[in-house]
Every structure is written in C-alpha cells, then in structure tokens.
Image 1: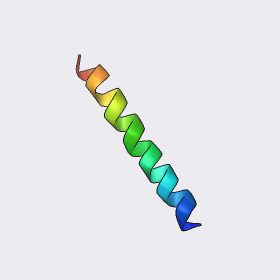
Image 2: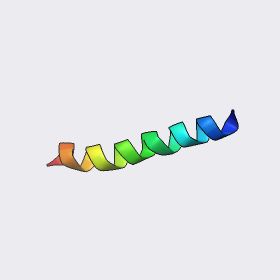
Image 3: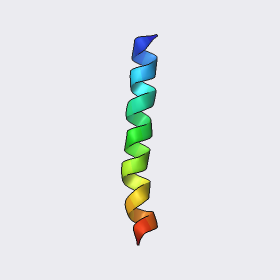
Image 4: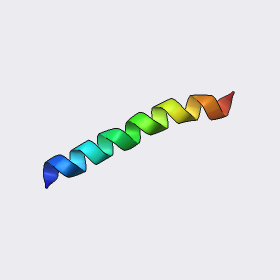
Length: 25
C-alpha cells in the first residue's frame, strides 16, 4: 500500500511542476 501512495504523491508533484510554470505565463 505504501508503494501506491508513493506513486500517487510523485505523480501529483510531477503534475504540479509541469502545470504551474504554464499558469505563470
């Protein structure tokens, strides 16, 4: 179960890192 949470957390960070810069523009 910890693996699933880790993957989900990493995916959320990946999305935030890719979307936030676009919103700043």
